[in-house]
Image 1: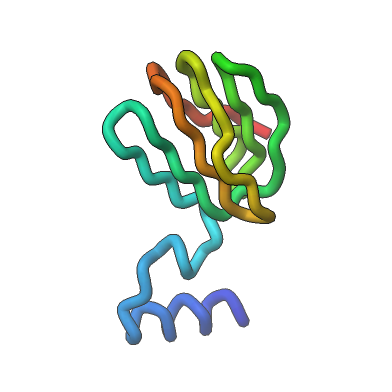
Image 2: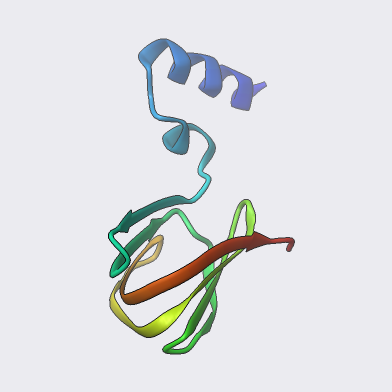
Length: 90
């Protein structure tokens, strides 16, 4: 009931969907900067692969020379060369 009320209120107020359902918000700038908001935890990290747990499942980023520039509770900023991004179950 509360979720439906939040959804309807958000639609009336024209909130973006990422604010309403707490799904991950992924911003990619070129191939060299990635900002991910609203993730649950960092599952794995190397300079070629980053795996995050999100409400939508596991998010896997593939690339080269990944560097974490900012890590906060629910936001992570990554620099490097992005070659792939995908969601998995779990």
